[in-house]
Length: 137
Image (cartoon, rainbow, N blue to C red; front, side):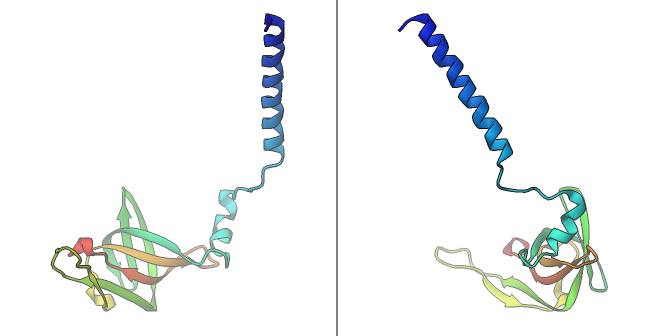
């Protein structure tokens, strides 16, 4: 193959690559959500819940404050929220933690918890359920 043919093939390849990239950018199929519309998007019926995880730093009435990796968040928990913990178990082969429902008063400062929440129209989060994973045992 001569040098001229090789140069022509390289130029054609580069042109195809550039044209393909341009077409890809023009016809992107997914739209991103800007931060201004994020509260509206989180309140969408398509998003059924949001998970917040962290260490409990305070409990004020039904508001639990969590901290994780230096960031904190306060979430108001519904009165009818379900709260689950895990009974202690022996760590033997084939044994699994047993989940049990507990009361809101059983949650303690320092517990690591997971809160399933929804976004309200106001942009605030409301806790639907809490799980205290076995890491606290």
